Image (cartoon, rainbow, N blue to C red; front, side):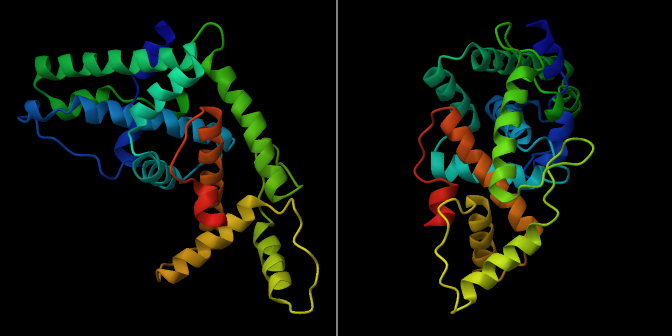
Amino acid sequence: MADIKNLLNDIIHDTDDSNPDKTHLSKDSVVNFDKVDFREKMSLNVLKDIISAMMHDETKDLDGMIDASIMRHINTNYNGSCYDYLTKSCDALRSPLLGSIIQEINNKVDEVAEQVQRTKNVPDTIQEAALKTKELLEACDENEPYEQFRRRLRDKVSRDIVEEVSSEITNSNDATDFSDVDEKIKQSNEQKDDPNNNTEEPKTESKIIRMCGSIVQEAVTHHESITTEQALNKAIIEYCIVQMDRLFKQKTNIDGYSRYLN
């Protein structure tokens, strides 16, 4: 448990840049320190780290997109909060691992609140309490360390992503390679548009590729600019959120599959 506390001491360092809605408080506004909001930011970072693990940690420059996708899912599809999501998942799974995470989040919130009142310095105190997402909760439970849990997610879900999108895997770092996806999407669209193409749609057609196409169409409908790469990244994130819901036994009003595949 001591390892969790040490790692949690790092949380908002990354959060400043990854949360565009972050409220910047003045040194004289101690009463404005919002424990619930702070707890929610920490909980969001936990969920984001889980999604990052599923994506093989190949998430450079995607923090904002992951945050936005998770928060839209939590607010619109789940009708709750990130902290609610963790606590209900813990109950559904009876998970000591999630229980440890929740306990340490609550402990850190109380610790930071006390420090804010004592130092009268809201922004500096919150900054010093930062939690680096990539180093989140390295050992949360003695039965299954968090890093082992992350590896299982990475190995299972990232492999599924590769199989969904392409049979070509990896570079020297064993990271997923989607370098030829643009061409695959182009070929798929050409086949769909060809009136002489009578080939039935394969049952194993990639959900991610189909979601990517729907995301591009949605952007066009709203007169928004989006590249194929951005749409693919968003589709992969939505795919991972669906996997997280299933893993944590959480029911939602709608998910990425329903939104983009129906």
